[in-house]
Image (cartoon, rainbow, N blue to C red; front, side, top):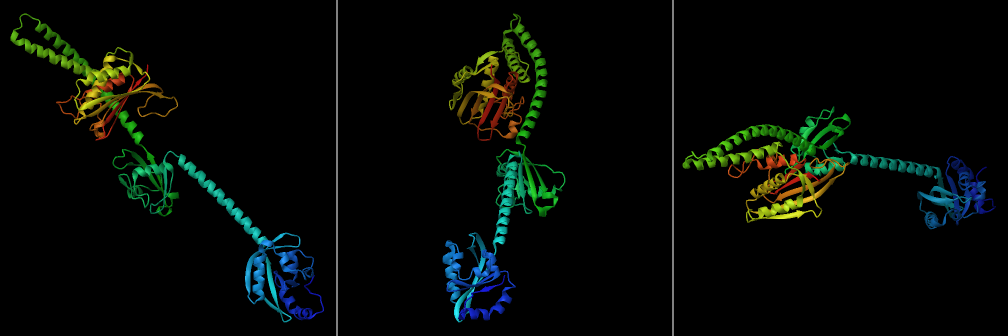
Amino acid sequence: MSETWLNIESETGVALRANATRYQRLLALTPDAIILCQEGRIVWANLAAAEIFGAEHAAQLCGMTFMQFVPPEGRMVIEERLMQAAAGTRLSYAEQDLIGLDGRRIAVELAAGPFLLAGRPAVQLAIRDVTDRKEAERALQESERRRLAEAETFAAQVRRVMDTVPEGVVLLDHVFHIRLANLMAQEYLRCLTDDTQGPLQRLGDRRLCDLVSGSNGGSPVWVDVAAGPGQHRHFRVALRPLNGRGAQGGWVLVLRDVTEERRMAEQLVQQERLAAIGHLAAGIAHTFNNLLTGIIGFADLLLNSPQLPESLREDVRAIIQQGQRGARLVKRIMDFGGNSFLVMRPLGMQRLLEEARERWEGRIRSDITIRLDLATEECTVQGDLSQLQQMVDNLIANAEDAMPHGGQITLGLRRLRVPGDSAPSLAELSPGDWCELTVADDGMGMSPEVQAHLFEPFFTTKGPALGGGLGLAQVYGIVRQHGGEIVVESEPGQGTTCRIYLPRA
């Protein structure tokens, strides 16, 4: 097959044949389709044009209008370009869709320029078939889109995994800017720093550079960090170079909240200390009680003796009174040590608190009111009436002393159920039904240092004139003897709430 010219014996045909040799040699070297159009019709086409449009030979294209190869949506643009080329403007390659003889779409790049044919203006079109390239580009774009979608899916999965980790994980760059933080880390960082918008400089009470100095890229070195003022939270943190490549590769910061762990450890230590003190106190109290029994007994005999001079009777009565006071003190110590004799029976706690308010309304200071906040459901426990009354009285007395400027004491009661599959609660309650008794005041509150010794016998902040430090120690012993738990919540200036949990009957 060879290039075919418009086969007419005319001035146009003669001119075309005169230039055939020159154009044939030139066009044989290019794979692009070359078409000459004059007055909108194709007057010459090369083999590449026939191949692009699906013609059997180039002569098949001659005499056809070029616009019939242009889809309707592109005709306005092509007509404009052909008019510009006919007017003398050379137009560089631009992407365009054409239609083959068989109706298929062909993606091409089309350039146009002016051409003088037999002294009359014509347009030369250069057409480059880019269908394969466009398909390859589309395939590449689709592949890239799939890879991007897979990467985004994987990143989302990694993020979900990170958000389920029970520790805070933070990715830092080499100068400690936060690049990524899981949900737990975001919560922890709010307690530990205000530097989330810039490079991290501190975590709680520790400088970040102190953590870097302890990081050697090997096993993580955990450092204890306390949160900012008023947070009362403690963390254990570790900082490691990312991928072991040193500071230039960035850092991984791991945050672990150990507040509850520390609280439980401190609570265990306190319980063990109180148990040891209780055993010691109970032993001493038992011996001392025997001594007091003898002293009070002999004093009674002496008081009833007719030979006792009248002038000494008041002194003997004073001995008996002080002995009885000592006996009451011994009873408190024995209550703390858990050695009291209990008479257990079902008791309605609502009635017990109502009676406590009636008992105290006549003797509590006038600037203090007692309010009841009781559950509507009956809350019954198996307990010793006198011991539980003593427990409530001691808590009310403590609340009164904590409010030198007056205020309100609230006696609360509600039923509580701890399911078998629940996590350990604040008071480490075992699964089952409980009564929660609360005595809350809006007084001065207590510091953490005071709370650490709260239940120890003879520990007091009131001074010798106001208390001997056995009130809460006795409460602690009574609660433990009844199989319960006690929790104290307090902050300086924010009042105090004592929560007592007793098993429901």
